[in-house]
Image (cartoon, rainbow, N blue to C red; front, side):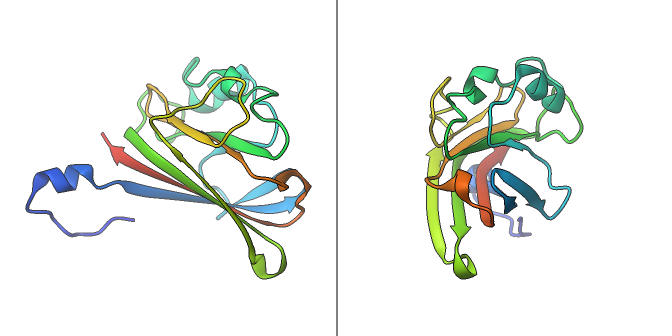
Length: 167
């Protein structure tokens, strides 16, 4: 979401993050549907192969499969990649990923809430079950969430927010 406000101090304008919010409706155990349909991301509850990552981003080794291997995407994990360039391309729009905030809403009236966050500078650790986010050299986002009980849920909502600075 952006506003038409112009900052008189250019440093403020260059340091205010944009926010991308992606929402996923849990439709069955380990199954989500993006809200709205067609929202741009590649997600999984299980290990992601290098071929899948490369095909989605259009860049060889933009993210390494070790960040999304069977250990990293173990029990109660959800993760993926957000392509910031539109169609597969070597030029993503993002310059800096500051942080990620995630919320899992489940139960009656989506009243049970679990939240996680991660700093972008920390990055994704290979073969590690964690909540983390990273920006690739091409300007795309990678993320992993560890949310207790996630694999067993058959309904609910996952909301992921990325705070980023454009090139």
